[in-house]
Image (cartoon, rainbow over all chains, first blue to last red; front, side):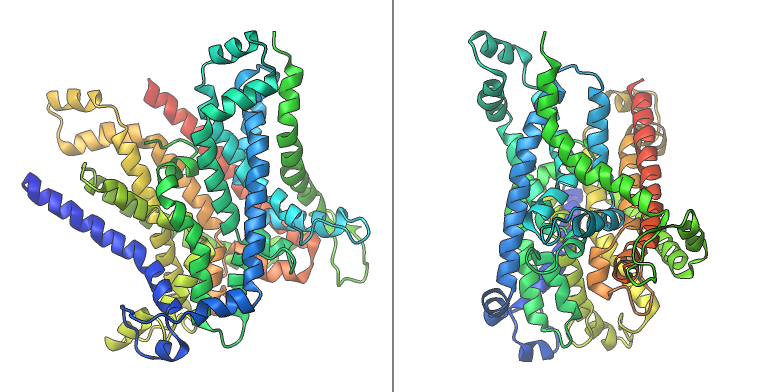
Length: 279
Length: 291
């Protein structure tokens, strides 16, 4: 094959694969734009009208608005907590030679592999039966969910940030120390600004992960801290499901990932494979 | 001399959180697994059961069936995804304009909520609504994953392939483009043919990537819940009730905590073995590559 022919061929494959990848999401959009009556017709792949009620009814008049609110609170709270902990931990792991530092780093990272299906039981019991004082427990609270997602997001962020903080020359720290900066000052004025891109990326990925998670949210919440993903799953158990509304809620739950896709896509593969694969 | 006390102080929040949410539940689940603790049993509290829960597991046909089903699902999806992903990566190994755009589209399935993916696939395969049954009907094929077990099983397999093949393609594209040039050049000079180069140079150099992707995929496929739950609800019957769904939908609502914990320990055991395999084999093959 000539160079030009090959190029066209490769474009065709990419386009074909992209259509396959995008189609289910596109279908979600089509269903969300159609009224019940339209959905009874034979399926078509184009849409000119938009049935806004699929969005407004569940989000404004039903409980799904508060589910979204809960998801935002939990994902944002988790991201802030994770970032504060991760920055300090990364600095300690990167700059100090203390006993067992490597083992601690390694143990921290392995937490990311924890299967939700197996941790569901013990965390549910701890939250709802063991760590209970009177009426107060972690079960069905925002703080409980914020803590649970640290299990995945904290190891991930420490791993991602460590590569970056390791790359900041120690001489900068030392120069600042001679100028009279405290250790906290060094972290705040030097490490944080210099690793800002890494902090931004791990924040966004942590946020998206917390937003997307389903199993823990379903097991550890009942009403007050229910998230959008659990709300979406509840659609299926309702008799006579309103598919248009389900598609609308699903589409809303996909939005954050769509918005930040361009920003994080370069780091997703490295993130999933713990840097075994780098670009 | 820097004080290690500052280091420990900085590590403290992380350690406290991870001990609380990682280590304590881990030990706690091992502990509970040795007890009878069932909200509906005569004795309300916990009572020592020794290995009884584990003994029961061996004869629990539902549990074993879900494990077997999950294993079949894992073998099918992971092998198809690996072959497809590697083939596509080899095919697409060419610098073209707009590759960033295509890569962004391909990382979409990796960033959206799995539960929404399940919703999308359900809407595509729903009889009377989705295009899949509609067009299959036209060629005379009765497609209904709410009714036919095999169709439901293979639909979950296809959905997983849709979900994860882009990941493998992108991982190998990244791996291939980061390979050093010199071994290939010297092999060309020595007159090696394309297959010899693939077999003796590309493959060994890519071994860390292959192993990482393989073990991560096995781990994830074994514990799949979200999308399958959304697509089929584990049905029809038990056709797509993989181990995670079994624990979540069958064992968890029964509030049989001791038994559920024993089951969780089995899942944890698989995870630990796979993680260990992942870490040792990757670090070993990295050393080989470094030589």
